Length: 188
Image 1: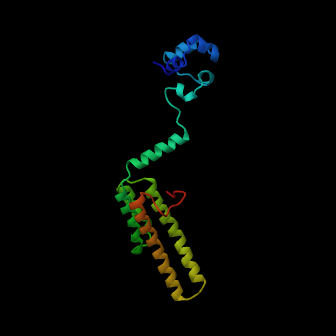
Image 2: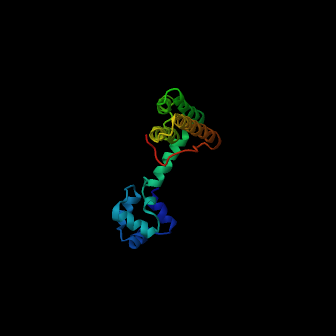
Image 3: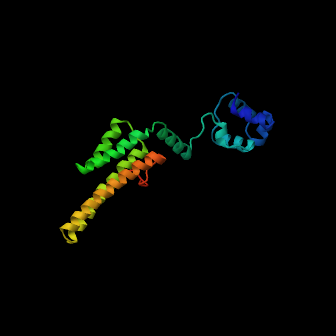
């Protein structure tokens, strides 16, 4: 049974009554009830006459932006493995050995472990921002010419700040399945 026929019968209307109410011919209503998809003016007029939304008359529902976002969220949460995400986050600690590894290690693991989701992208984005900001702050410390000890302190504080960010995010992934430090955008 077609959607139009079901909706028409729910409103206790005959084809002729719906035709008068919508200014659509009986023949067109018969064609739609036998399987033709209503479009344009016909769709609007029938929906208005039945006092329903247009997409209820269509066989393929119209996907709105909100529906699309909900689908993305559903897809992203289906295959989330939080223990792997935590490993990817903790792999950023390798920057202590080789500085660019705070970005390279998580990217490498993201592809190897097949965890291309928003949380992992956020982890990498946060590390990218830290990688840009840290040298700028370090250079400012040098240009201020406050002394070698102050430069060493700045370097230690920058490293500890990133270690703190990584460990705090790992704890938040364990507790609430989300990141504590995150950006409003992804850089990858």
